[in-house]
Length: 555
Image 1 (tube, rainbow, N blue to C red):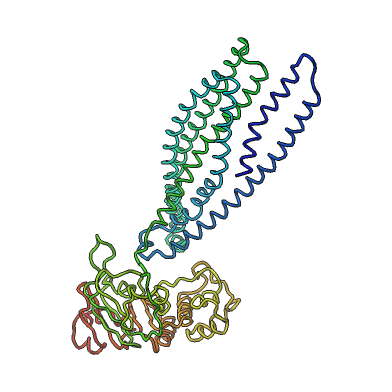
Image 2 (image 1 turned 135 degrees about the vertical axis):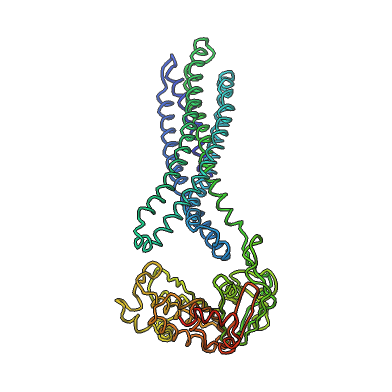
């Protein structure tokens, strides 16, 4: 701020020094070269210090802005990590990418330019106004009569630009979402030869963005040209009014030159201040979008006095549990009562859309129940920290997600900091070690985006190895083999049986033939749990499970 003050003062002092030189040159008795030379040296010193101060403001201002952007991005990313499944169910990832990148840049550009620009412009305007009044009051009043009109014009145009900037941000988020969707599904696109369809979808979004951008630039053009008009009009007013004042001996030549220089300083500061409102609108729009996310509360709230879930045995109980995804939707689960003993293998079956996966997602609190309670070893899961709860639960899903990195990094994700020997042992238990050793770089092989370089069975075995390494007491297997071929399924089933040993296990299976050995099978419908028992017991009942099994179970 001290450098900004110095830069502003240099702009105010220079015209006074120039007036002094001109007055000295117009003296009839001769020019004092000492005064002229001394003034010139002083101005040169000011220029040097002004240059250094400008460098400091520019370099350190941008560094400060970058640090601010880094901090805001870290806070935003941390908050996104805390938001529940339900938030991502209804939010496009491309929109989030736009907010975490370009939006934050505009916010920090505004934030680090704002203090010094606002300070310098205000200093120049106030200082120039005082000096101008001191030189000629009438001429100054003529100029300042135009300034309110300029500010009203600026406010009107900035309101229009803000709306365009907001629409622009939203549309670029839509484009990001469309690009991400298309590229992640590029194999589907190519298999259906739908490249033209994707290009048309992208073109529609791109043209919409162009339309919004053109309208925004139209307003920007009007804004800048309007400011330039006021600038030129006020300067011409001073020139012509000053000429008449000079002819009427109301002002001398040196004062008029100094006056014109101060007017230029004043107009530059006003223009900077007015144009700064454009940057303000960009920054404000970005900041509002930033706050929209930061102000989004998590549906999954951890109690302040939440305890640590430790020494878990794996006893789980659902007590009259009901759940629906939103207040406007119908209940997915109603009055669920289920008691599971430690180490018990439970299979959950039912018609598609019956709430099987939803039921299992409630155990690690990916969603919160509306009524009832879920207990682990007699402790309500809402009374313990999310971290300690989820550390004791392992999930193997149908849709395996592998991060872009090496095989080792993906397995070690189950236990950050794990040694190579620990990772290899987990891979052996998951029947994955042999195929990993045959890869070009073994455990250091790059798996590609989402594990694209591996087969479905290989990805699933890496996912199982990751869970072995985590070593949870409670295990959730959600359609873990439904998308595999018979050979891969056999290998993966062996791995899953080994993984389930000694753990409380919940299994959702597409092929009912894979869960006939479960200790207990629970049949879930829209009415709740309608049947439960062993495979033989349920087949003898000839109820819902019997009909499901005879229809699809032997497939």
